Length: 588
Image (tube, rainbow, N blue to C red; front, side):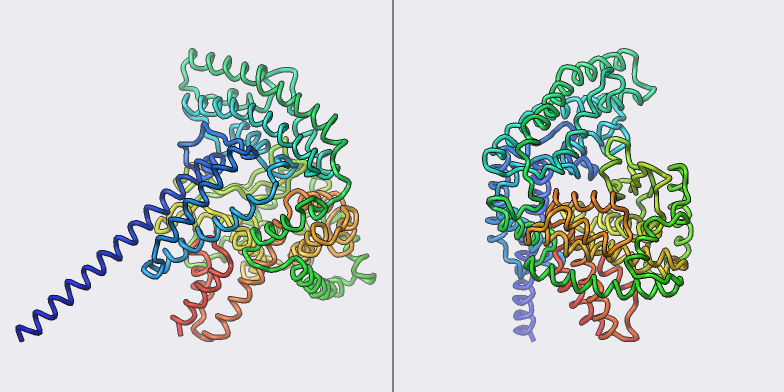
């Protein structure tokens, strides 16, 4: 008996020792993830501000410079080495996901550094110059509540004036190497700088926050800030804006390329292959994606034919889409406020049904706003996440450049994608899950995030929408839009398609306006590969749902499935598939 007790004691001590070692491994890995996120924020301070991490609000990186690229390379090498020293088998399930995410990010990051994408630091769709303008409005992520907040943005503007000079330097390098934007995109970028050059400093966008200074600021502070902001705008920013506008018009536009896709660039094929991997989080080749897109377009054409028959339209599908595109009844508004009110009514209709599909709802508040005027002409509808601490709501932005031309065809579907239960649910649940390390709570993978949002569009009938056949057509049309993206994005960047060819293919297969389609095609030209993420992610989530339903049968619960997909936040699709497969096996 004593011998048995002695052996048991040794076994217990051994297990405790193993557990201590395991705990130490977990602690080491926890420290790694914390440091990884801190250094990511230092490398991407605008993203840190967007995510509510305010220690970086006065900072801005010159992300196109050789010095910055070296910082990135050192960062990737450092964490690749540290990962190699971690025994991933000793980690928990969630830690293993974290391990694989960092491994994936460092690998793709290093691949991107091998190219010269930094020689095209500006385009019309997103980037530092647009983010800084948005922050300057005083109503976005950059806080303007204290004097320190105002001083932070003043420092950020100072660095931004240097950023503008650096962008010109690297764009000139791009000209010498043939790494330049297409002419059509350069023409869209010029007004983004030109239109912000104002005769009066008080009318300048970067002066906006001065007009909304908190009432509790002393007169001395208010006067000092007014003077400092005026000086920064007139002596630094506006001269740089004029310099940039002149450079774009006189040097960059004449040197801009006539081709539309990046396949024509010196390193185009390799660069596009990396972008495709980055945005889809798969190893699918452009040709494979193109073929999948053609297949999805054909399938959705068949579904749209059914709606055409249902509403009694007698012409061809193309004629039906042209009719819908210009249908007067689908353009009922005269004021932007009416567009916003329509989205508010959609929100009210789905509220009673959300609990049928989800175990819980996010705590983060939600708002619908019109897109700011300075970027409305080139923007599509979008969601900007709120902060985890609740100080800023999630915001669904709707561009309404002309309310009389606004078509309501896709409004129900658009709300599900951008707002609820699409991006607002996915991003808010992720940020609110404090069990996840911060680098995952505030992370993004397009295939997962956009895949979820596109999948959310298919939940409309279960949420009480799509009762009008035209709104259901809107859902099909939006899904078609994403299928077309697979064809057009790969067509532009790997098959040598022209901008006009891509526009015509889109017009032939979806009920969007020509202006809308043109803006979309130019978006694909600006950010190659991003458009691939939606359909690739959606199809994977649908595949996993069908598998769970098939294998679990009566045990399948849609609420649990949605929880399992969302609870761990964004990740490469292979990791999501592994997670859902493990859940299916555990349920069996």
